[in-house]
Length: 315
Image (tube, rainbow, N blue to C red):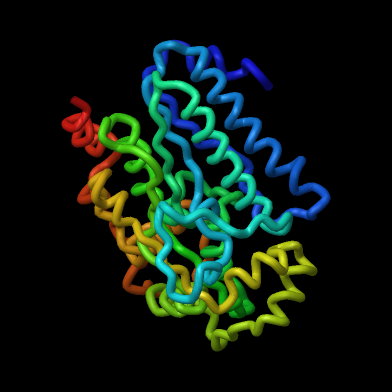
């Protein structure tokens, strides 16, 4: 609603806009009203409030790699996606990507019409790492829970990029205060294929793994299951099936000073936290190498430490 953010923004020096509908599968007839429209209008309302608040100097927006790429092969096999790329996939079946792209375009257009505040955009990949609570709305948490506790060890040959939640938080914090930060920043530690991910989890945490061999679903069967249960649209499946994404986070590493957390550590930390939250059911006694491991995240440093380091560059 127009004006609804005015009071929250008034007097602020920095504004970080992170909220938007995250719905990966939606009927075409509802795609615009449920995903695209709320995301774009939300962006417009927040930035309208920023324009009315004379105190704001910097805005940080959470976009997505979905605004960078919709199909891992859309620019040719092996292409390494950078901040210069924008998705070519504007199908209603990919409404989430459309919403993030259009809302980011809107942000840059609104920013260009004034000179008081600057805009920095963060484009994270699929976010993994330890959850704060037993969140059933996080796709990464729910899928990890399924992969470890499912009695049916079947997975599709889907590729996806990943980044740790701590790096996403640090990127926003540093981008907020570091004056030299500008433009877009892709956050992706690496791209993985889901069967490889499951095999690694089974080796690391055998106490949760099914004794049955892993079965990789062919495309046609994945398509049927995805359609029946509303899990993934045909367009999205074709964009991801059998393809491993290649993305560069060189700019984020260089400009924001990030040392991205390795994917293996992110997953160990996630499982350890899920154990603490009683989200996993062991099939047998004994622990794998990663069971109840100390996450050791103090080595990375929390957001306050990242902020202190970033403030050195604020002048």
